[in-house]
Image (tube, rainbow, N blue to C red; front, side, top):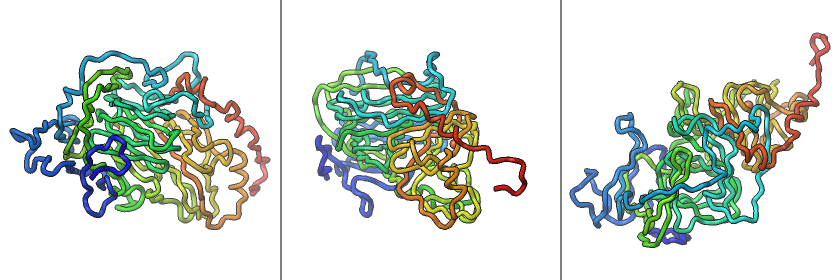
Length: 451
Ligand SMILES: [Fe+2]
């Protein structure tokens, strides 16, 4: 079937019965999907001649010998070598890669930004990407970057892929379509998408202007966290992750492909759309996830657990339990703990925490951390509730309390995060953020039993 609102009329596979139209459920499944009947070879990967005259091609997301391997077999109108010609370098000055350490920028500090405003300038997914922080090293495939995107224009006959990274996209405003080699993902606030390394796509604006957050993961892919003693249910459930069904277009128009490679951008000119995969099977695919399906687990008698209980996805580093990136969600939930200071406690953390607000109010910071805004609490820098949050939570009459109208997230990484010049000088940095703790009072006077 064709997608009813697809401006490019990609020919899309029918959806298996019982699932969301256009998507297939399950995290990391070995999917198979075909947009034309009989396009997908059965029982083998590489027949002597593929149906419809298609070319077979493998996309490897892990080394051949990784266990388990992640790869997808594509059956396409042209092999990808036809979608890659001579390259020339281009400049996208606001999209930075690690290491990006500016001697004039101080990254040591607690920082918070208002939402980056839209400008009058027309911006695409590529020109509208604004890097806020970088961590690690893109060339050695460790670390990450965080970005804000401001998108008002669709990519026209223009395509992109990143060899450096997979992208975790967190919309905050507007709706985008990711038309990829492996199918179509439509994305809106309260959803996230993962675009794997190497996958070619274009981004269209379905409803603009669009703003959101991106975590660019240079390292090992995001996976679901182990639930440990929680068991087989709650947190994110595998069935709520959705990969798109196959969709392709057969369009012969002059087009450009932009490639991010080792932190630099290059373009190549081709004569057709590279979104020409008619059928595919495999477990290396883009997917989306509805954050409203995240089932939080929390304190049901006393104390405040570590925020790791809210991990949606984790990208491991070489050190067990110490993530390259954790993606953590703070959403609506009931607070019921007794005789407990319920908001996040004061702390210092070896991990570096970058937060963003999707909507509503965050419990540790009733004011100032606004939708579209971000905050950064870098490696081992102290932070916690402001005075208003502390006083309110210390004196509250504790009964069951619904924390409502709130959805924030954290990109937490084992590597220190460096501010870009844009984050330090151009983005709406709140100069007075550090003052939110100034008015915290000394309450101690040596009197035992004082509370
Ligand atoms: Fe923290």
